[in-house]
Image (cartoon, rainbow, N blue to C red; front, side):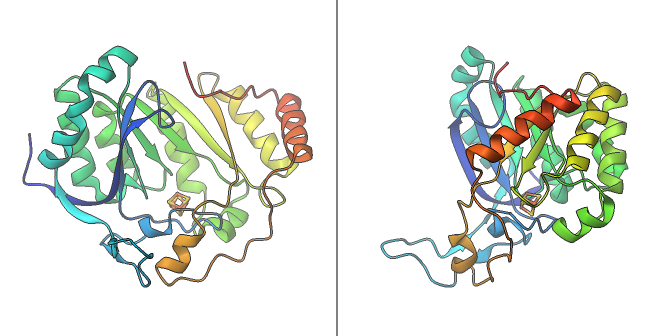
Length: 263
Ligand code: SF4
């Protein structure tokens, strides 16, 4: 195990049922190159620990993030080994964007794989292709975000163009990677017909892709206040039954059958 490499994380969740197959331990990495207008993890954005400006009453948490070694993380991951084996679970690297700490991300994936633990990488795909490919031998499953259609619109809503993200998706798919495309839908923001058209085109072109729909929620807005950042100016609302019906119709129209999360 390469214990020389250290990195910054802001949380570890054990016993997660939301972050991939089976029961999982999810490691949340600090650092993200995107600034999604609906982000509910702004404490992940900076690579280094983020100070909480106003600690919550009865809380001793004054900082998001800590420096850890691969060994320290693996000591936690290993505790649920028996449950991974029983449930076909494993470890998920999330964030933030794990690939921003490339060496730490790679060392952790490698350590998990060396112990036969299933690995899942949550990524926004905005990473140098060469670096993404270096991780491939150690990743069993990708949760790959696809957020907005149209490069300018993608830039407006996330802070970066989608060109590299779509290119990397093609590269991974052509290498035979197992990918669940995770698509946040934000009412009135990205749920336009062109976006569903693009999902349909991806489904036709990449038939092995699975599509998971992530409906917008406003949980986590308080974190902007905690770390002294303005809340994003986003005109949206919690998805209504009408939104859900429209999404279902659009997905049917373009031939995308959403993946419901569990194999
Ligand atoms: S990629 Fe994820 S963590 Fe990064 S800004 Fe977007 S929603 Fe937030």
